[in-house]
Image (cartoon, rainbow, N blue to C red):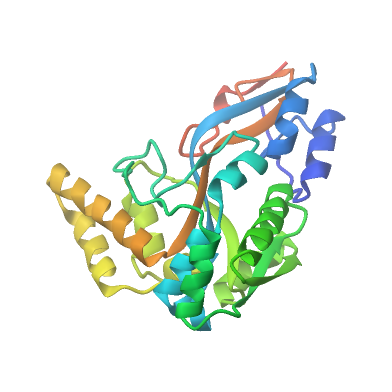
Length: 289
């Protein structure tokens, strides 16, 4: 059986086409649509365990964002519980590390800064950033991305931060992040392999992607990433990754937001359309009746 794919960035259009039978399946069901689609007798909604983590990228090369105190203040200013409740409708869970929950060497006890906008405001003032203004690149047409953007704009305002939402076509946003044409922006990552080295290298290892477009820099972290990659003792290696999670959180390389399942929908005559935690679809097992 042959499968063909279409890129349809607009969430509403994608879901309507599945409901109308114009598509056999669609990826990334908006959290707000899960319950209603589950009630549709013609559809199946799959919520599969994942390694997905959504996070707020911070451009460390832009002015005050280069100060760790400012980035820590932003972390304090964001109510992750509200995001999980309001945006993910409870399907997500608050993230405390760049290594997702359930993944190899995830540190369950990693620091999670509490929501405290007044503390954030005081920290920004002490860091000389009381009038902080940020440009936030948002993927237009992505319901979840737009909801998070509005919520973060409101939350950061309580800490005295002015956020300008710049909605762009998803085909543009990646290039803008690579070029550094942003202050903050929400992105996500799913692991391709079980070992944490891949994501750690991309996010903290100072490779060619500028630490996943954040421009984060810490030579001690860079050295530990390289050492952990080749360490053969499993206990020592686990401790290295625990230390890396602690260091990343202390530096606020980015702001961890939430973990969530893969969420896809298919017509009822489709069987075996699912993903494993690393994101792989087993289309060889998928059958259309």
